[in-house]
Length: 138
Figure 1: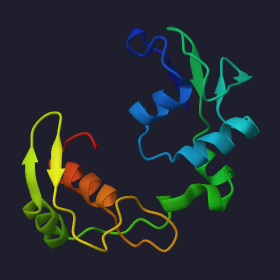
Figure 2: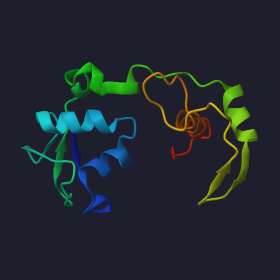
Figure 3: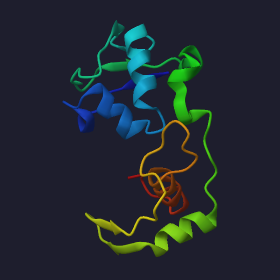
Figure 4: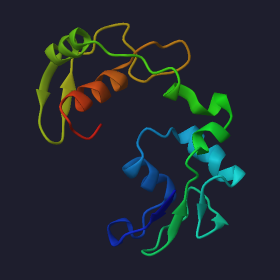
């Protein structure tokens, strides 16, 4: 798949472009794919900190996630379904929320970020909440 860089994405880094346009791609998977040359910019190997210019072509093979090592795919294979009840429980713990700040009375024992041995986290729940509301994930 070939993606053309538009003026809106002028002067952002490659890794930030992925975060903006392909948020389900983990940082580790992107880094390994860039090192192996699976993701290319104008036909050349790119680095995560390369600044994009309008008109450039970002090449991403359709099956590129399959080409990366399994351990680099992280949570993409181990996605946990977040129930409506879990989302509602966490929403009840929100003390304040506006466009810039969210104050949360986080339950003890609930991880903020996912990781090895973590089945669910605040990040996972808020991603599911955003998906439920058809919003961009935080």
